[in-house]
Amino acid sequence: MSKEENNQMPQEEGLDNTLKVLKEGYQFIMNRRHTMQSNVFETKILGEKTICMSGSKAAEVFYDSQKFRRADAAPSRLKKTLFGEGGVQGLDGEAHFHRKAMFMNVMNSSTLAEIRTLTNKYWEKEAAKWEEKEKVVLAEDSKSILAQIACEWAGVPLEEEDVDKTAQQLGDTFEASAAVGPAHWKGRRSRSKLEDWITELVSEIREGTRNVPEDRPLYQFTWHKDHEGKLLDEKIVAVEILNLLRPMTAISVYIAFTAQALEQYPEEAERLKDGEDGKLQRFIQEVRRFYPFFPFTAARVNQTFTWEGYEFEEGTLTLLDLYGTNHHQEDWTNPALFQPDRFKEWDESPFNFIPQGGGEFSIGHRCAGEWITIDILKESVNFLVNKLHYELPEQDLSFSMDDIPSIPKSKMILTNVKRTSS
Image 1 (cartoon, rainbow, N blue to C red):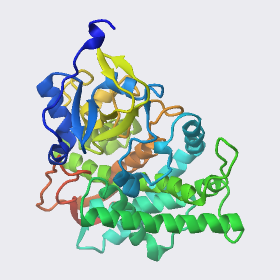
Image 2 (cartoon, one colour):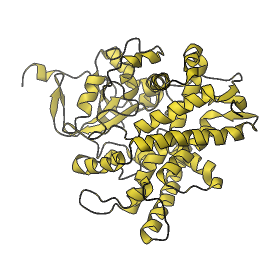
Image 3 (cartoon, one colour):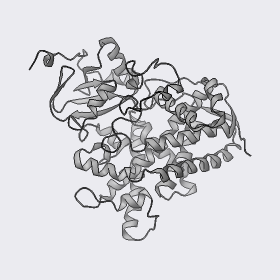
Image 4 (tube, rainbow, N blue to C red):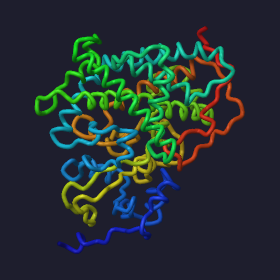
């Protein structure tokens, strides 16, 4: 090996730095990147050697399926709450390609058009209820909007009396992703109940005792065959259906930050009053870049290789900094400023803007539902700006970088809510 290939990777001191991850949250990797002046460094988390990476160049390597695998990377606690066990996030190779295609097949232009129609439908429905309320807690109440959008689009039957309960259970699964103690166990219980619910629906469909629309994900996933020509286990179908419902409901975090951005950047909000689609998209893309959503994603080195002069040993746990890459000075001009117009010039790289993961949609691990997220947010910000009147009473709009997921502390309280069209 050459001298360059023998470089010593910058290394954080300490026997274990797990508590620092919990304390610093989204800024854990960023802080060390700055102090070590390196986009890659080694630390120890949960007693295990861990490599941390940041920036678009690191992301491009991280999403190389020859160099990294996902099958044994996610901690058990995330599988028990956020991802479920056996889902697409933990697959590699042909199994991943085939399962990812199942998701991509339900993402098309007609899907997105329907998503936008459903988004308006359920904003109108919930806003009518909000007019009768003394106050609305947007981060919480928007979960019901999103759960209804997700279930109707996916073909999952959801009774009116079950909307709020289901929305909260879906919220528990992503809100418990980094929690400990009672909050974590609440997330596990909610996931278990949701999986049991969907598993029962799948069983009824296969037995012929329940009819659901054949053009919907619930039906298509129920009858999907894997790369070996076998029907997916009913429990796995439930996990994958929840991999549609959960992230769509998690858009409530972005909706809360969207409302905060409208309040804190009124000049940008004013520009959205003409409802022009390009302006709406640039605004919500900047919300997704600027505010914290998920801090990092994990993989393991698939086979030993050298990058930037550093050796990545097979089996080593590796974290890619999602938040830090979206704020990386090598990739973004003035990353600490909220500037939607930066997306006029964005090169649409799959590696420098990665709020929901990076890489290519069709063959990589980039979130298949990212287009849905964008369209739901465009319709949501347009509704907030152009179809809803509300007031923001005095409240705490700050958010913590060590809470995962982070959200404004007040969760965005709205009062005197009125639809402008009513």
